[in-house]
Length: 368
Image 1: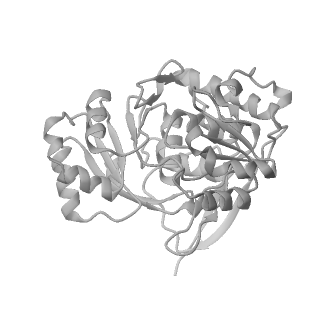
Image 2 (image 1 turned 60 degrees about the vertical axis):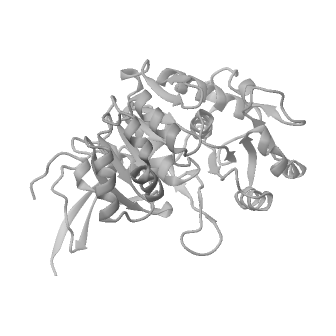
Image 3 (image 1 turned 90 degrees about the vertical axis):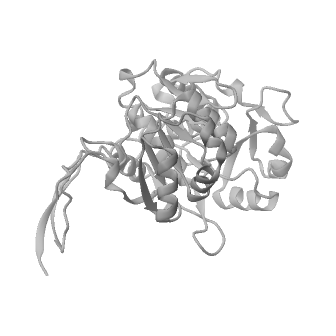
């Protein structure tokens, strides 16, 4: 057994430690600014691509630029602050994939609050259990789901709906919160610690009931940086990419490896609220999607669908599958559908924030 010294670099200190059997990557070290709050890290380079499309709402075609997302999320942060949401409070997102998911997550981070996301198709009992376990102070949802959660108003939980139509009784309108003035420096927390929790996804793993997983600013910054920062990132996104987001954003895979990673590099996110094969193929062709982040059931559906022959999928340069293993037969089948794409797989878990391993094929060539 060999021992080798390792220097652990941090903004504030450097410590030398001894570890047994250390395997170092041939890839160069990257700087991880995990002293920053997550939102500051995500928007660190926004001046370079402020006018670029950030979000495309698939169903409507509405486009939000990076400047739009930055300003609107800060205004929403002010709106949340004015409602009494403060540092360490929990905001629940109960929404299908939509731009409001992104805006709410970022706004909560600006306030120093914590976001927990739930599947809107959960039963009232399941939603109530998560809301109470996380001590949610406010829920952002759509009017059609309010009946599932209105009993929580008896516990003082505020409900905000994103619909533009008439809002249910005793609910607040999302658009009114985004019209608030941007928060002044003195209205946001004096200090958000890197060790403060920013996300509280619930995961059951393979057994048992869902449990809240505390993910910190430092942890998510580190995870995103390991995926997309540096000269040879494992998840090779760039600013010209259009990233498909059809996977549920209440799940850590889409939250981290799609949403946060795309925002960090300045890519465009195509948001689709649900998977429907024909609509998916239409959107890939129309928006010239370059990166498809998928799971095996979606791979199977695409591989077996005769509809694929009707659409131009040549823009896709990378397909990544995760959440479950993808066999060689399916790999070969999906490669035939996307002739210009590299295919790879990733492995992770919610508790890891989530990525633990990823195909090297996504990066540039490395000689071992």
